[in-house]
Image (cartoon, rainbow, N blue to C red):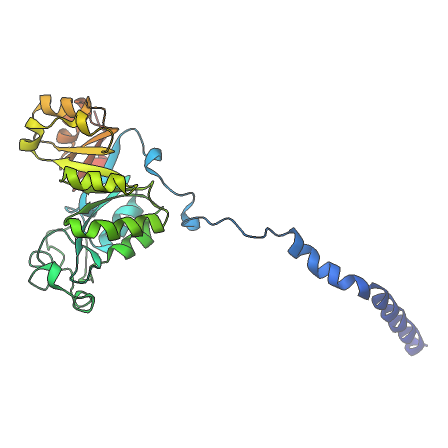
Length: 293
Protein backbone atom coordinates (compact mmCIF):
# COMPACT_ATOMS: atom_id res chain seq x y z
CA UNK A 1 0.00 0.00 0.00
CA UNK A 2 2.85 2.36 0.86
CA UNK A 3 4.61 1.59 -2.44
CA UNK A 4 1.45 2.30 -4.42
CA UNK A 5 0.92 5.62 -2.66
CA UNK A 6 4.53 6.64 -3.26
CA UNK A 7 4.29 5.72 -6.94
CA UNK A 8 1.15 7.82 -7.34
CA UNK A 9 2.82 10.78 -5.61
CA UNK A 10 5.88 10.56 -7.87
CA UNK A 11 3.72 10.48 -11.02
CA UNK A 12 1.79 13.54 -9.81
CA UNK A 13 4.99 15.45 -9.08
CA UNK A 14 6.41 14.58 -12.51
CA UNK A 15 3.24 15.80 -14.22
CA UNK A 16 3.33 19.07 -12.26
CA UNK A 17 6.96 19.74 -13.21
CA UNK A 18 6.24 18.97 -16.85
CA UNK A 19 3.46 21.56 -16.85
CA UNK A 20 5.95 24.20 -15.63
CA UNK A 21 8.74 23.39 -18.09
CA UNK A 22 7.77 26.07 -20.67
CA UNK A 23 8.21 28.69 -17.93
CA UNK A 24 11.75 27.67 -16.91
CA UNK A 25 13.52 29.97 -19.43
CA UNK A 26 11.44 32.91 -18.21
CA UNK A 27 12.18 32.13 -14.58
CA UNK A 28 15.88 32.09 -15.38
CA UNK A 29 15.79 35.30 -17.45
CA UNK A 30 13.71 37.43 -15.08
CA UNK A 31 16.56 38.18 -12.60
CA UNK A 32 18.86 39.04 -15.50
CA UNK A 33 16.32 41.35 -17.04
CA UNK A 34 15.85 43.16 -13.75
CA UNK A 35 19.60 43.64 -13.20
CA UNK A 36 21.14 46.90 -14.49
CA UNK A 37 22.87 46.60 -17.83
CA UNK A 38 26.05 48.10 -16.35
CA UNK A 39 26.60 48.70 -12.64
CA UNK A 40 27.90 52.23 -11.99
CA UNK A 41 31.66 52.28 -11.34
CA UNK A 42 32.88 53.74 -8.05
CA UNK A 43 36.45 54.60 -7.29
CA UNK A 44 37.59 52.79 -4.15
CA UNK A 45 34.09 51.59 -3.28
CA UNK A 46 35.45 49.94 -0.13
CA UNK A 47 36.25 53.36 1.31
CA UNK A 48 33.05 55.12 0.32
CA UNK A 49 32.47 57.99 -2.14
CA UNK A 50 35.42 59.56 -3.93
CA UNK A 51 37.13 62.43 -2.11
CA UNK A 52 37.54 65.68 -4.05
CA UNK A 53 39.30 68.98 -3.43
CA UNK A 54 35.99 70.83 -3.15
CA UNK A 55 35.10 68.55 -0.24
CA UNK A 56 38.10 69.53 1.88
CA UNK A 57 37.34 71.02 5.32
CA UNK A 58 37.53 74.74 5.99
CA UNK A 59 40.96 74.31 7.58
CA UNK A 60 43.21 71.70 6.01
CA UNK A 61 45.90 69.61 7.67
CA UNK A 62 48.20 68.24 4.94
CA UNK A 63 50.90 65.62 5.64
CA UNK A 64 54.11 66.91 4.03
CA UNK A 65 55.93 63.95 2.38
CA UNK A 66 53.45 61.79 4.27
CA UNK A 67 54.46 63.32 7.61
CA UNK A 68 58.26 63.21 7.47
CA UNK A 69 58.87 63.64 11.22
CA UNK A 70 56.59 60.70 12.04
CA UNK A 71 56.94 58.22 9.13
CA UNK A 72 59.55 57.42 6.45
CA UNK A 73 59.03 60.17 3.89
CA UNK A 74 57.50 59.34 0.51
CA UNK A 75 57.19 55.66 1.48
CA UNK A 76 54.13 53.52 0.94
CA UNK A 77 54.21 52.30 4.55
CA UNK A 78 54.43 55.88 5.80
CA UNK A 79 51.64 57.14 3.58
CA UNK A 80 49.42 54.24 4.60
CA UNK A 81 50.09 54.83 8.30
CA UNK A 82 49.20 58.52 8.06
CA UNK A 83 46.13 57.81 5.96
CA UNK A 84 44.84 55.18 8.37
CA UNK A 85 45.35 57.42 11.40
CA UNK A 86 43.05 60.08 9.90
CA UNK A 87 45.39 62.81 11.12
CA UNK A 88 45.49 64.66 7.79
CA UNK A 89 43.16 65.71 4.99
CA UNK A 90 45.81 65.65 2.25
CA UNK A 91 48.81 63.43 1.51
CA UNK A 92 51.77 65.28 -0.01
CA UNK A 93 54.18 63.33 -2.24
CA UNK A 94 57.25 64.37 -4.27
CA UNK A 95 57.83 63.17 -7.83
CA UNK A 96 60.96 62.60 -9.86
CA UNK A 97 61.51 60.96 -13.24
CA UNK A 98 63.64 57.92 -14.06
CA UNK A 99 65.81 57.78 -17.15
CA UNK A 100 63.11 56.41 -19.46
CA UNK A 101 60.28 58.48 -17.98
CA UNK A 102 58.80 56.42 -15.14
CA UNK A 103 57.56 58.68 -12.33
CA UNK A 104 58.65 57.75 -8.81
CA UNK A 105 58.09 59.10 -5.30
CA UNK A 106 61.32 60.80 -4.19
CA UNK A 107 62.14 64.27 -2.88
CA UNK A 108 65.89 64.58 -3.42
CA UNK A 109 67.71 64.72 -6.72
CA UNK A 110 69.88 61.84 -5.49
CA UNK A 111 69.26 58.62 -3.58
CA UNK A 112 71.97 59.35 -1.01
CA UNK A 113 69.99 60.72 1.95
CA UNK A 114 67.01 58.38 2.22
CA UNK A 115 67.98 55.06 0.58
CA UNK A 116 70.65 52.36 0.54
CA UNK A 117 71.87 53.53 -2.90
CA UNK A 118 73.70 56.60 -4.15
CA UNK A 119 73.58 58.68 -7.29
CA UNK A 120 70.99 60.66 -9.26
CA UNK A 121 67.45 59.35 -9.47
CA UNK A 122 67.24 60.40 -13.12
CA UNK A 123 70.00 57.95 -14.08
CA UNK A 124 68.09 54.84 -13.00
CA UNK A 125 66.13 52.37 -15.10
CA UNK A 126 62.94 50.83 -13.66
CA UNK A 127 64.83 47.59 -12.97
CA UNK A 128 67.53 49.49 -11.05
CA UNK A 129 64.85 51.40 -9.17
CA UNK A 130 63.25 48.13 -8.07
CA UNK A 131 66.46 47.26 -6.20
CA UNK A 132 66.52 50.52 -4.19
CA UNK A 133 65.36 50.38 -0.58
CA UNK A 134 64.29 53.25 1.66
CA UNK A 135 66.30 53.35 4.88
CA UNK A 136 64.02 54.73 7.63
CA UNK A 137 65.63 57.29 9.90
CA UNK A 138 66.42 55.77 13.32
CA UNK A 139 64.91 58.86 14.95
CA UNK A 140 61.39 58.11 13.73
CA UNK A 141 58.82 56.93 16.27
CA UNK A 142 57.68 53.35 15.89
CA UNK A 143 59.22 50.42 14.06
CA UNK A 144 59.94 50.68 10.34
CA UNK A 145 61.66 48.37 7.89
CA UNK A 146 63.52 49.03 4.62
CA UNK A 147 61.13 49.00 1.68
CA UNK A 148 61.06 49.65 -2.03
CA UNK A 149 60.16 53.29 -2.77
CA UNK A 150 56.88 53.47 -4.70
CA UNK A 151 56.18 54.61 -8.21
CA UNK A 152 53.68 57.42 -8.67
CA UNK A 153 51.35 54.96 -10.41
CA UNK A 154 51.28 52.86 -7.22
CA UNK A 155 50.53 55.94 -5.09
CA UNK A 156 47.70 57.04 -7.37
CA UNK A 157 46.23 53.54 -7.51
CA UNK A 158 46.38 53.13 -3.73
CA UNK A 159 45.19 56.57 -2.61
CA UNK A 160 43.53 58.17 -5.62
CA UNK A 161 39.94 58.98 -4.75
CA UNK A 162 40.43 57.97 -1.11
CA UNK A 163 42.09 61.23 -0.11
CA UNK A 164 43.26 64.44 -1.76
CA UNK A 165 46.84 64.24 -3.00
CA UNK A 166 49.31 67.11 -3.39
CA UNK A 167 51.94 65.88 -5.85
CA UNK A 168 55.00 68.09 -6.21
CA UNK A 169 56.73 67.80 -9.56
CA UNK A 170 60.48 68.14 -9.01
CA UNK A 171 61.39 68.24 -12.70
CA UNK A 172 59.18 69.54 -15.46
CA UNK A 173 59.77 66.71 -17.91
CA UNK A 174 57.46 64.49 -15.89
CA UNK A 175 54.47 66.83 -16.07
CA UNK A 176 52.91 65.53 -19.28
CA UNK A 177 53.07 61.93 -18.11
CA UNK A 178 51.70 62.83 -14.69
CA UNK A 179 48.81 64.71 -16.30
CA UNK A 180 47.90 61.63 -18.34
CA UNK A 181 48.03 59.41 -15.27
CA UNK A 182 45.85 61.73 -13.19
CA UNK A 183 43.26 62.33 -15.91
CA UNK A 184 43.25 58.70 -17.00
CA UNK A 185 42.28 57.64 -13.48
CA UNK A 186 39.55 60.25 -13.23
CA UNK A 187 41.39 62.11 -10.46
CA UNK A 188 41.68 65.61 -11.93
CA UNK A 189 39.38 66.98 -9.21
CA UNK A 190 41.22 65.36 -6.28
CA UNK A 191 44.92 65.88 -7.07
CA UNK A 192 46.87 69.11 -6.78
CA UNK A 193 49.96 69.27 -9.00
CA UNK A 194 52.51 71.43 -7.21
CA UNK A 195 55.69 73.25 -8.17
CA UNK A 196 57.74 76.27 -7.25
CA UNK A 197 57.59 77.26 -10.91
CA UNK A 198 54.79 79.58 -12.06
CA UNK A 199 55.39 78.62 -15.69
CA UNK A 200 54.98 74.92 -14.85
CA UNK A 201 51.80 75.73 -12.92
CA UNK A 202 50.49 77.55 -15.98
CA UNK A 203 51.23 74.50 -18.15
CA UNK A 204 49.50 72.22 -15.66
CA UNK A 205 46.46 74.50 -15.65
CA UNK A 206 46.23 74.31 -19.44
CA UNK A 207 46.30 70.51 -19.13
CA UNK A 208 43.17 70.64 -17.01
CA UNK A 209 44.88 69.96 -13.68
CA UNK A 210 44.42 71.56 -10.28
CA UNK A 211 47.59 73.54 -9.58
CA UNK A 212 49.43 74.48 -6.42
CA UNK A 213 52.50 76.68 -6.04
CA UNK A 214 54.82 77.00 -3.06
CA UNK A 215 56.80 80.15 -2.36
CA UNK A 216 59.86 80.86 -0.24
CA UNK A 217 60.29 83.73 2.23
CA UNK A 218 62.24 85.71 -0.37
CA UNK A 219 59.72 85.05 -3.14
CA UNK A 220 56.81 86.03 -0.89
CA UNK A 221 58.36 89.48 -0.41
CA UNK A 222 58.03 90.39 -4.09
CA UNK A 223 55.20 88.13 -5.29
CA UNK A 224 51.98 89.57 -6.66
CA UNK A 225 49.83 86.46 -6.35
CA UNK A 226 46.67 88.28 -7.44
CA UNK A 227 48.07 87.89 -10.96
CA UNK A 228 47.87 84.10 -10.68
CA UNK A 229 44.38 83.70 -9.25
CA UNK A 230 43.03 82.33 -12.53
CA UNK A 231 45.70 79.65 -12.94
CA UNK A 232 46.73 78.71 -9.36
CA UNK A 233 44.25 76.77 -7.22
CA UNK A 234 46.35 76.61 -4.05
CA UNK A 235 49.25 78.79 -2.89
CA UNK A 236 51.53 77.69 -0.04
CA UNK A 237 53.74 80.32 1.61
CA UNK A 238 56.71 79.62 3.87
CA UNK A 239 55.54 80.04 7.47
CA UNK A 240 58.60 82.20 8.20
CA UNK A 241 57.38 84.88 5.78
CA UNK A 242 56.41 88.29 7.15
CA UNK A 243 52.86 88.77 8.40
CA UNK A 244 52.25 91.33 5.65
CA UNK A 245 53.38 88.92 2.92
CA UNK A 246 51.13 86.13 4.18
CA UNK A 247 48.18 88.51 4.44
CA UNK A 248 48.80 89.68 0.87
CA UNK A 249 48.74 86.07 -0.33
CA UNK A 250 45.48 85.45 1.56
CA UNK A 251 43.90 88.54 -0.03
CA UNK A 252 45.08 87.65 -3.55
CA UNK A 253 41.97 85.81 -4.72
CA UNK A 254 43.78 82.45 -5.05
CA UNK A 255 41.12 79.94 -3.89
CA UNK A 256 43.20 78.37 -1.12
CA UNK A 257 46.26 79.67 0.73
CA UNK A 258 48.25 77.31 2.95
CA UNK A 259 51.57 77.58 4.75
CA UNK A 260 54.57 75.25 4.92
CA UNK A 261 56.34 73.51 6.53
CA UNK A 262 54.68 73.65 9.94
CA UNK A 263 56.20 71.71 12.84
CA UNK A 264 54.44 73.08 15.94
CA UNK A 265 50.92 74.06 17.02
CA UNK A 266 52.16 77.60 17.70
CA UNK A 267 53.40 78.03 14.12
CA UNK A 268 50.10 76.64 12.83
CA UNK A 269 48.04 78.97 14.99
CA UNK A 270 49.98 82.02 13.77
CA UNK A 271 49.39 81.38 10.05
CA UNK A 272 45.75 80.48 10.61
CA UNK A 273 45.24 83.78 12.43
CA UNK A 274 46.80 85.54 9.44
CA UNK A 275 44.10 84.00 7.26
CA UNK A 276 45.59 80.80 5.84
CA UNK A 277 43.10 77.96 5.46
CA UNK A 278 45.57 75.10 5.62
CA UNK A 279 49.03 73.94 6.61
CA UNK A 280 51.53 71.47 5.24
CA UNK A 281 53.18 69.74 8.20
CA UNK A 282 55.84 67.13 8.85
CA UNK A 283 54.03 66.29 12.09
CA UNK A 284 50.33 65.74 11.30
CA UNK A 285 49.84 63.50 14.33
CA UNK A 286 51.23 66.14 16.69
CA UNK A 287 49.06 68.87 15.22
CA UNK A 288 45.97 66.67 15.26
CA UNK A 289 46.39 66.15 19.01
CA UNK A 290 46.34 69.91 19.65
CA UNK A 291 43.28 71.98 18.81
CA UNK A 292 43.93 75.15 16.81
CA UNK A 293 43.48 78.43 18.70
